[in-house]
Image (cartoon, rainbow, N blue to C red; front, side, top):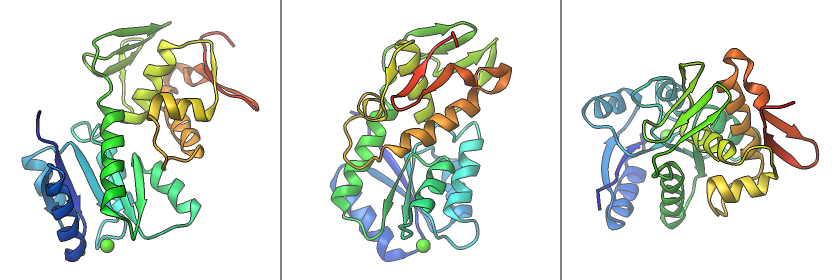
Amino acid sequence: MTTVTVLIVEDERPIRDMLRFALHASGYQTLEAADSSEARMRLAETLPNIILLDWMLPGTSGIEFARQLKREELTQTIPIILLTAKVEEEHKIQGLDSGADDYVTKPFSTRELIARIRAVLRRTDANDQDTVLQSGELRLDTAGHRVTLKGETLSMGPTEYRLLAFFMAHPDRVYSRSQLLDRVWGRSVYVEERTVDVHIRRLRKALEPHNYSGLIQTVRGAGYRFSLSD
Ligand code: CA
């Protein structure tokens, strides 16, 4: 079994200490940074398997840093869990829109956090079989973890990639939000149904070049469908 490395980006030392302790106890390796510029230094040395990112950081905020990481080719597939003290719904959505894969609200139990880390890693590691899925001029190659449209590589986050792979493997069928959560996210009690909408929006955006965003169709009152026909 390969060791999973977690980068902790958190300015409060007691929380960093607590996270390090809990992660080591669960067999994870850790890297630490107190802000985004320190995190940059860690990332230049080692690419972690997952990043725990505090929302309220001095300097660049966690949200802004997540956006940066999801824009950069080297780091865009690394899952991010935001650590946030902000509980308002709107802020959660903003957090997910930044590209984060999940968030936990402080104060959280380390047990809950470890469960979330496992769930996120399960989701993003699920592309284990090498297959090529093809729909029209859209092509998804699981071996290369690459999506191309008319030969051009599309960039998308790990959750959007998973979602697209699921849709392409199951075209022309309607799936409800809860079915998508089960099939794409795995049975995690923590994820809310509206999370699906956030990632559908991001997936459509990724498919926008060449007007392919219409492939993901909203079926009112039912859910979503992937189809090449209107
Ligand atoms: Ca903080």
